Length: 172
Image: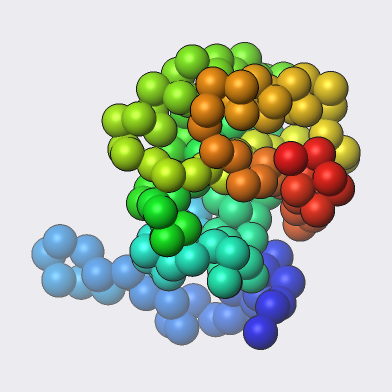
């Protein structure tokens, strides 16, 4: 069942501190900090996504991407590597940029796809501005990778809680 991840995470703020505890190396417990809760949620979502078919479980993939990229103050370009059955091999954050742009090198994406023996890719990046519309550079990058025989199934743009699929818009 799809749900609003940010609303779910907001629930953490309303819980009393004893509800979420972290065990220290010495064996003592202390209340979990907000960033520890978010990191634990990202790890849980990543475990659910790894080995999953993102086309068969798009809600889990989108939840993972929202948690991982949705609130970043800078652009990140990542790749979800898929095997021949479209199961997730790995999620790799390849490039980090500024508030408004990231330099992405198609050659490096292609090299990483070959290194991981990927059959297909999902390209992913975030727009901290909150505007999920693809730029001309986003469209050109997707086309460039297809020219070097890297199969791109989709290019997803995460803007806060919104995720735009370039495939759904007919741009892939």
